[in-house]
Amino acid sequence: MRLPHKQTTENIDFAIIGVPSDAGASYRTGQREGPAAIRKVSALLRHHNPVLNISPFDYLSGVDYGDLPVVPGYIEDSYKRIEESLFPIIDAGIIPILLGGDHAITLPELRTITKKHGPVALIHFDAHSDTSDEYFGRPYNHGTPFARAIEEKLLLVDQSIQVGLRGSIFSKNHLEIPKAMGFDVVTMEEINKIGIDKLIQRMIRRVGDTKVFLSFDIDFVDPAFAPGTGTPEVGGATSKETMKLVRGLKDLNFIGFDVVEVLPAFDPSEITALLAANIAFEFISIIAYNRSKQSKEEK
Ligand code: MN
Ligand code: MN
Image 1 (cartoon, rainbow, N blue to C red):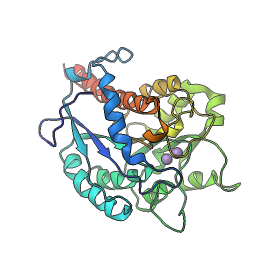
Image 2 (image 1 turned 90 degrees about the vertical axis):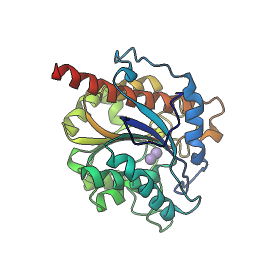
Image 3 (image 1 turned 120 degrees about the horizontal axis):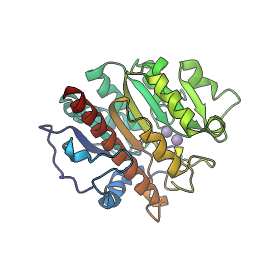
Image 4 (image 1 turned 180 degrees about the vertical axis):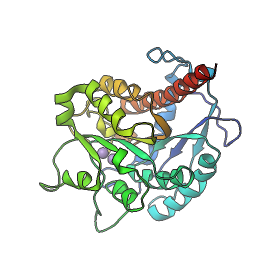
């Protein structure tokens, strides 16, 4: 988006932060290339959001912070470095917009965010619930971050919601796992029945005015619109529905965002990276929209 590349925490409201880790990927790998691909195509983004009628930079200052350090292939070492390097940004009150990376990175993000904010609500867009206890007998990978987040008491689960789950699953009871943990779970099948507007209302009701983190796994979207990802599932949302959904959450109290699982090697026309860049632009627009509301209320 042509933002200045600056590793600063001074006088900024938000930071775009790459997390180029794919040590947690179970099937295809290469999500480490996601941040670079999203940045490249984000040069196409312009500075006014006509739907929310907001020019973010009238209200906000932001930087491209660059990438956090990771250790390829070593997820626990990567987690440690992600947490250490993200903390000063969070501690300075800056809203992070993190670009993955596979979904395993959301665990160290949440660990760091809760150090500052305490447990937070989660809005989780994904074809998968990512609440498995383990994969290959191991606790940290992109199929488990929200199981760990619950165990580590990082989430206000009664105000958290997972949307978009679909596809074949490991067992008859697999969808019951996140529900038993306390998540509200809306499958894609159910979204098809209730429609986007009702889904937005349900998400807003669920979260209320709690501090909330939004985690967007790009495989929420149908592979026709987002083919460049690691574990695609057919029958997902369109890009048009996705933009409407994200914008519909504009009044919530967001303390951070990520968009994960972009895999450029499977994204020859860059449409997946382009969608992720536009989702990040909506996140920036939402932060600005809330600032504009606050400044109107103060007047
Ligand atoms: Mn995921
Ligand atoms: Mn997924």
